[in-house]
Amino acid sequence: MLRKSGIRLLAATALLGWGYQAVSGAHAQGSGGNSGWFVPKASQPAPHPAQHEAPAPVQLPAPQSDSEEAQSQTPPILPQPPVPKAPDVPKSAPPPAPVIGVISVPDVMRMSSAAQQAERVLGARRDDLARDAQKEQAGWRDEQQKLQGQAKTMSSDQIQSSERKLQERVLAAQKNFRNRNRVIQEAAQVALGQIERELVQIIRQVAASRGMNLVLHREQVALSQESLDITQQVATQLNGVLPTVFIPAADVDPEVLAKSGTMPTTADADRQAAPAAAPAKH
Image (tube, rainbow, N blue to C red; front, side, top):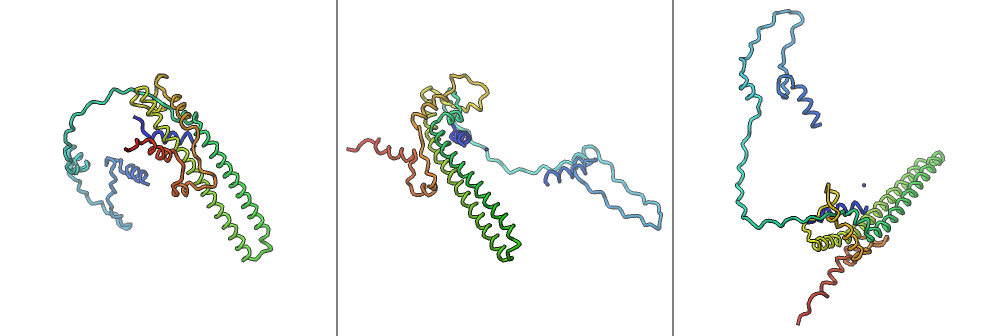
């Protein structure tokens, strides 16, 4: 059995980086003869500076036995709510004997032509975004230095107006860069989702063809024989079925495209092929 969430995690990685002190302090203060409990010292009246009277005898408490002392320091045991008795589970057929296979999803993604396409296209967009951000930051610095040089010949109102315009420019650029980064990330999710859905199906098909009923991630297995590894077979099948993926254009917002219902993903292709495969009614 293969968990889809594990494939998603590894595929995304391959495609795209008072309380304790207070308790310990109280324990340290009360560690001398109080078993970790903090007990403040009894306050005693200060002696009068003009009198030197003999201290009054102090009545000591009766000594306690070891059992009484342990009982006084042991916290009470609170009653617990009743727990309902679980009913007996009826016996069922035992599970089949495991026939195990292993796969490395990161290796499959590295060999996937669709994943390489997505990384190439989206990597170029990330590089463009980084260059534009660096260029814009350099413009901010130049504008700020220019404003500092002209500050002596400008009035306070002019300085405040120029600073406000620069701040508005910075905020607008930051908003634009965040939006562009979001579009790139969502485009990557669109591409990865297509590969992920197809990969799950292919793993099931390859495992069934070899009689496997349990497929583990190779990265979590300490030792396995090479004949149990289906990585190469899955990658070959994936490239044959899904050599490329749909990636939204750089100027298209994936959220807007998704809301329009016109995103041509593999799920849409499956829905279009389903009516054609259905038997005709007579």
